[in-house]
Image 1 (cartoon, rainbow, N blue to C red):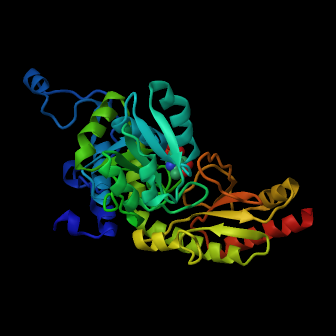
Image 2: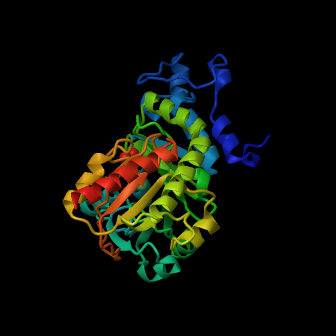
Image 3: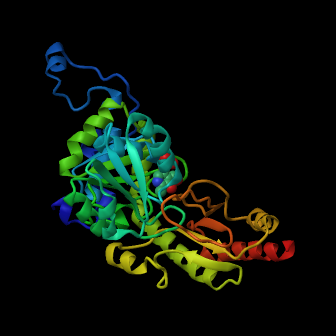
Length: 387
Ligand SMILES: Cc1ncc(COP(=O)(O)O)c(C=O)c1O
């Protein structure tokens, strides 16, 4: 069967397996390797061996990269030590001194800090754009714009971008389109079919899925594959065999986990909309969300992360809400099996996001949703007791 004809759920289970090369063992084992020995001088000098040196790939990293390439439908994947590392690699693969990046204003905050505080020192300029700009991005493109970076939905504020409209304008001006697709994963948003050249994933989140691994990747289309692979190699970027193994193990159950995250998130989102303490829920799968029509057009599912704007309350009451929760952990990540909650801090410079009350971010884990609702309900009770 041709892999491209298989459904994504099937590819997630089968792609990248190398059982025949490993005595029939189902999962590619963990290869911990720096040195790889050559049989003889002729082999060393010919350099025609599958593995040369640990940093440049082992069966552990190759299994993961091949599985991801199959799932994304791209040409080539490289694994990185974290999601942020993958974002930096993607930008450096298409930009150099004197170039310009158009970055979505709702991006993950450390992406902004990397552009503003590090890439600026190397002559790469960044301008931020409104996530809802669509084809209007044309007015911001400059002759030296080499990258238009999307993240959809946006971190913390969950706007859905019109990626196909942005991509067609960007490509007409010779700019590459990069997308941080961590929220949807390749299962729910097909980055290449919607015009991206590079699909970036913080695999730390849903692909790892168990809150125990830091890893990222860049998957490139044909025209960008060689440059991304070369930049990855020259920067010495690497992910350990243990981390590749964990990511690959997570990948096998990604479809079933994402389905449950999405069901729990939608149930929580609808329940939160009914609560008197809540001003607004930010989740594109809700029929009245401003991004719903684009989400319905371009996505095949919704995952577990959503935003909530509470009605204005004193800081003391907000603290009582957070501190009384028992099932929702307070921590800066998401995508694992467990539910999480954090206050959201915005860093926008090019567009406005008005919120009268506190903005929070919730990750719906795999627990029973009734228990999650009961936990949030006791949090809301604590707000009442504190005011
Ligand atoms: C949307 C998004 N992209 C990228 C990252 C960075 O991933 P990592 O923590 O693996 O560097 C994160 C981390 O929270 C994220 O939320």
